[in-house]
Image (cartoon, rainbow, N blue to C red):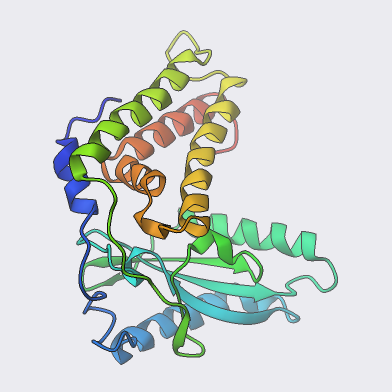
Length: 255
């Protein structure tokens, strides 16, 4: 599972800090281009007709564009992330509503349908109205055609080389933890180890997005960019695939 790419070069690629927001999405006044707006609205309407329409009391609170393409640190491989926020899917039962929407969102994440816009994959989800934290800080409302939380242009407090050095420790800690878990004779995780491994990965993700949401530096903070680097180098997916292979071999539910 060792990453084989040049880590410092990959770190440099994700630490791009542009003067303007992506011209593919926004004009020089940071307003969303009409072509982008219309396409995302079409995707949103398609998802609502296929999923939300089955819940007559559900209310679409907002459709939000978020992620690195709504910041100054986008790159050629950045996804276009947008989310449909739904309230009252199950009337007077917010816990069931959340579980239901979580199931739909998980199903959507398994679909192979990923529209492309100027070469960037469009990633989408359906979330409870109060779950905006999962989408980070930079939010553009498609329904109201305005910024809910506009991006802040800052500078990185570390170089690509410094991030690469920190990543070596970050990755090694992850690998050592995975290596320490109980394995089957074939080298896969046991039924007892599988949830521990998955929880560790999920915690890394949660810590990264907590950093992005709550720290002053937002998406410029070190912890968030360590997680970005883990994903861009393919290591996150390697570990997740290993966990999936282990769960499949043991006849367990897939992560």
